[in-house]
Each structure stands twice: as structure tokens, then as C-alpha cells.
Length: 258
Image 1 (spheres, one colour):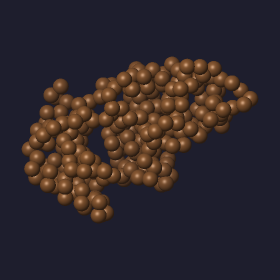
Image 2 (image 1 turned 180 degrees about the vertical axis):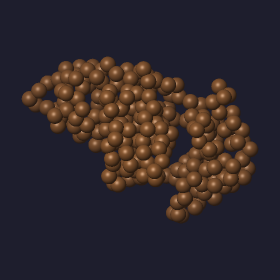
Image 3 (image 1 turned 135 degrees about the horizontal axis):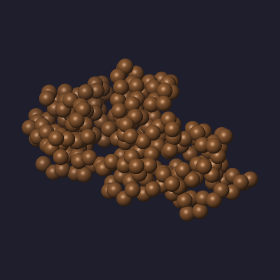
Image 4 (image 1 turned 60 degrees about the vertical axis):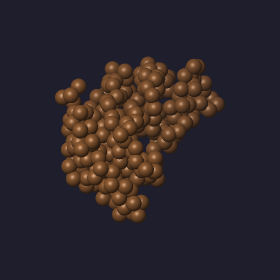
């Protein structure tokens, strides 16, 4: 079976902005010294996607001022210089979170102790990062230090995510095994999960995404739509023919093998 390289995904932490900077020059300095070098390294990777909320453009940075005020404010001019283009890329260009598709993971409490309302629980950077086992990208913030962060889920469980706020927190992307499915879909096993999850594989077919236990082929998340049923039949057929292949991939990607 052919294997394809996975796109590495990062989710910008919208909560690491909210009014935490003392003034605009401090924000510009922080982004210049920490965020931009980190973005430069991320974007030197192949097939990278950096997701953010569509309202990141409007979120307050300090004293109620947002990115729009920095760029278009008539009363003040800030020394953005060569960083203007990078700021624009960071805030204003796709891809955004798929806000019409709520993550199956619901976050109750953020790492800084903030409790989320129900409407926001499944539509934030942490819910998507946990669901897709991706990394968080934060602006420098005392409440979101670089390294491992823990979030509390609505079901009472806890999950850990890796937070990048500067190059000091960088870790190399982990190997992934991937096989194609009909309909431009794929099956994927991710090495980073092999250390702390039960053996499973991920599936994406169009808008359908789910994870399946390797031992049984059973879906971890149960969906009742006709799309889910159709995609599940495709997955079950693939699983019956390739169970041993995906088992071997999981074992080969275990941390002890590196």
C-alpha cells in the first residue's frame, strides 16, 4: 500500500491574545522576537497548515485595541515595517477553524483555569488540537507557557496538548503512516499517539472524520448520519483487508522503536 506524507497542523491559541499585552509596541516586540521566528521555522516544513479562528483579526490585544487598529488606526502609526506582511498572513489569510463543524471534543476548562460556555466548548483551538492530535501555537503569555498544557473535558477526563510559544519549545514533527481510501480519503496512524493511546487509526473521507480501534475495527465516535454510515462501510471493507498492515504500522511507530 502507498503511504503519503501528512500535512502538519497547528492551531493558534486565540486565548493567548485577549487583552494581555500592556501596549501595542510590547505586542509588536513579542511577535517580532518570538512568534515570527517560530512561524518561519514552521513554514519551512512541507505541507503545513496553521489554523486560527476567523475572529482573530478582531480579538483585543491591549486596552481594547485589536489588529485592525494597528493596521488602520488613523491617530497612531506603529513601526510595523517588514513585519506588516507577516502579521497580515498570521491574522487574515486562510485556513480558519471549520466553525460550522463542531469538534467531537468538548473543553470544559482551559489550562489557565478559564471555564468555557457550552457554545464555545467544541469550537476553540484546544478542542481541535486535542481531536486532531495537533500542536497549539500561542503568543507569549504567562498563563500559556511553552511545553505540555492540560485541558479538562466536559466528560470529566483530561488531555494534554503541546504548546509552542517560541523556538525554545520546538519539537520535531513525528512520523505518520498513511494509506489512501476511495473518495480522496485516507487512513492514518500517528506515532505521537502510540505512547499514550490505545491502538487506533484515523480516517478522513471528505467531511467525515473519525478514529477506529485497531483491535476490533470499531469506531470510537458514533455518528448516525447517512454520510457516516456510508463512510463506515468503506472503512470496514478496508479494515478487513488491511488489519495486519495497520497493526504493524502502529507497532513500528511506537516510541521504543526510535
